[in-house]
Length: 177
Image (cartoon, rainbow, N blue to C red; front, side, top):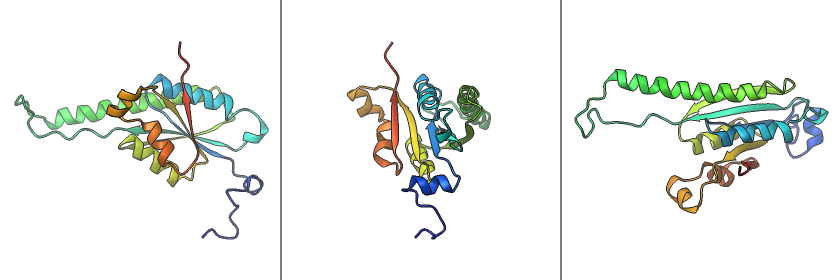
């Protein structure tokens, strides 16, 4: 039960009086689709208008965990700790590059408060858990535009989030060129 002093989240006037802006989460990865969703968000959701003053944009990147390998693979190759460390270093570099690219896009909007969050795990679970934990007002994410067959085999992170996140989810499709 919420404390009486806390503003009602369903009442925009109470939230505005409390001085807290919206908490908008944008899921980013190394794809052009996620960067398009971020750019779209900055241009259409978090504009320079006074109504968005105090909004916080959280750039959320889900780093896929390193696959668990047996000590020896089928070809007899031994996975040393150096190989595993190299794989972890590469994954960290990919994550850093994705977040840096997203922060660079946000730099053109100095009025926007930007935070970053990188977590390890299945992107579907990481995104849903993080938005719930930080009480996000909106989740924005891109869509890779997979067809029915590809979605059946690969799964769809955006579809999973649309079905399971507790906050509204806005899926931005990249226009066909």
